[in-house]
Image 1 (tube, each protein chain N blue to C red):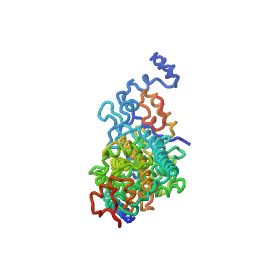
Image 2: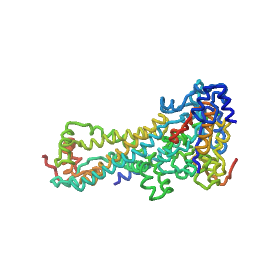
Image 3: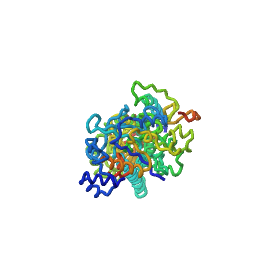
Image 4: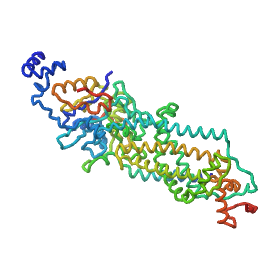
Length: 198
Length: 342
Length: 64
């Protein structure tokens, strides 16, 4: 099976937020919950750079390790998913996540914070693939339909790449060689303990 | 096609060909064909490794009205995970099991501290009034639930989950979380009441130095003098007050996450809460032991509020004198016969 | 023993009061992380109508 990863080519990202909108629309993600976001560093300065960020589906994911009820699991495609039936909304995964991916329906940590929600790599949840129950809790399951995450699929500059880590790393490497510059695969060192040599 | 291009490039740029030969790639050098400007348009832009080196996390700007979302990357999450999954179970396990082992060892080697039979046995003296007992038990029942539900966050998935299964464990943990978050408030109330009511009896003084030097009534065989609270009890009082206030402060910060601090602050808050918490539990285990099994007659003080005068004179002689001087007619001392002065 | 039972009752009552007072303070993400222009009617979505994370009204079908 493939080892699914995201790669954001920061030299191409133009902060159009199409990935954010695509994600919101595809999964009916409610207000205030942001599975994907575009962060701009040094906004307005010559050194400005934008990066689209969601759950990176880390190798040896910290969120899964710290969860007090072990509600996370990793699929055969190395996608990190969680069960909203088990989640108690404690918020620990947010402390552990290097990328700020976990989202909660409610703000205060007392009582029910609600079930954590995060990027599923368009792969649904633990329920049977393509069922209504799965859709209502986790959104659509494009991976089960043989498609890749919508954010990357409709990225206008193809800055955001999704797919098998080796393949997208290869695409990125070729791109860097061709154009002569690149700023590396943002977040890969933290998420996957490896980076794309450029 | 590639070969042709390479040949062309080599003709045009001798230096470029040399670089190409070194890298051994069948792609033309960027400077010559692919990027006609020969410039890197994002050369001035920030780079991840450099930012992480300088600032150790990546903070930017985001169009979402949620400040947390502007944090792009914080590798410290991995470190916090190492604390929570690597260190904390060991700290907690050693503190709590170590204390239990010490108490078992003490019980089986020294046994209970017995109540002496004197002519004052059977006479009762009021040690804690109803309100004092109420605030003690208010804090105590909350503490027990808070301790168990708190330990569940660390050890539940390791010990309980394999036994009862993930679904039952998740439901239990959900209710445990409600209990932890809401019983924290009566705990804090009880803590403040105890601080106000008992602080005047818990100021360390010279008698405590002598008490500690003699090893208390616990380690040594002597029964050194003590006022209302001996040095050991004063220690428990200050452990509860300082530990409890630290737990309350860090707990409130975690109930209102990100209201006062950022992600690294939240991680530190959780670490402090967890470490103080397990040490607090270990200390209270000793307190529970000495107040129930460890010493005969001690439980009555918090049970009915009235202790045996013989016990009181043995462990809190100076306090008994104080009480008797205060109420010469003896409303505090319930008993048929008058107590001869010693 | 009477004091202990009284303390348990008081603890439960105070915890209930805390739960009520805190629930007033609790804000759903759509209020906390939106600007005044957002008009949100909580309906069935990924977090459910109660914004609790439990989607209700099952059988609404695959929308959109």
